Amino acid sequence: MVPDRSRPRSAALQRRARLRPGRLPLPPQVRGLGLQVEITEKFRAFAGNTAKQTAPIQLGTSGGWSSDLANGYCCGGTLGSLIQVNGINYILSNYHVLESDIVSGGNGLVAATGSAVIQPGLIDVQCSAASAQSVGTLVKLGSLPGSNVDVGVAQAYSGMISASGSILGIGTLSANTVSAALRQPVKKSGRTTGLTSSSISGLNATIQVAYENECAGGAAFTKVFVNQIVVANKGSRFLNSGDSGSLLVENVTLKPRAVGLLYAGSSTSAIANPINEVLTFLGGKLGGVATMVGN
Figure 1: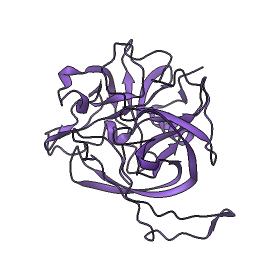
Figure 2 (figure 1 turned 90 degrees about the vertical axis):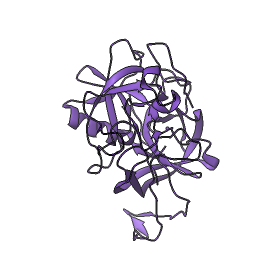
Figure 3 (figure 1 turned 60 degrees about the horizontal axis):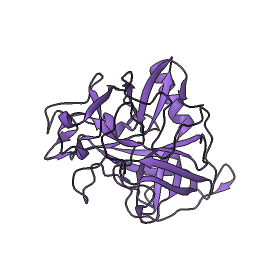
């Protein structure tokens, strides 16, 4: 499986992770529930809403770390949604979209708290941060490799993000969340594929994802995630490279509730962290209760 940011080449994926069936021994049942093993191709973590917006911007849009370029590539993903902790608004995305440059190698830099986060991401402005706009500053949380979530945040600049947390094609969210359920209709809005819908095809999945140490960099670590949400992604029509960081929500017209945070996928399946686990992690790191911005 691959956590995904995109590079400015259609066939190139910034992060590479893989699920290897047979490498992880699985029991026939967990907590009385039968397990089903599905053989897939490699999963890729992913970066279609690429235009530069007029502030205040809506989310579900192209974005990323302002210096996310190295080794002849620049990378980007999706600024997914807005959360709040202690009255402060933060842009929600993935670790591997915002802060996974952890070596000074190809660009002489590492991602650090206070670094600018931009819209659109570098991949959509010919790798020139001057052609994008700063919408927040990175708050480095280091969710990986230690935790069970791939999450990163930026503190939003005043006036740069829609105060309602509106997401392109989705609108304002509910402030409440909902747990995933099998065959539940869901949707998301992301950099590459825009507004798409599907249904949940699996729960409590165990997956293995390989992460790089910078844009187009070398291997950093391999992470095994447990209790993940699986979404049907036939032909990569629901999620594709660059959609990482998109918020997974229930497929209702008004004020949908958040279900998960998308971060990886293949041409058959997309993977999300359960949203309540994401919010619990964020609250612990940021020193308060983390909530979705919505009504």
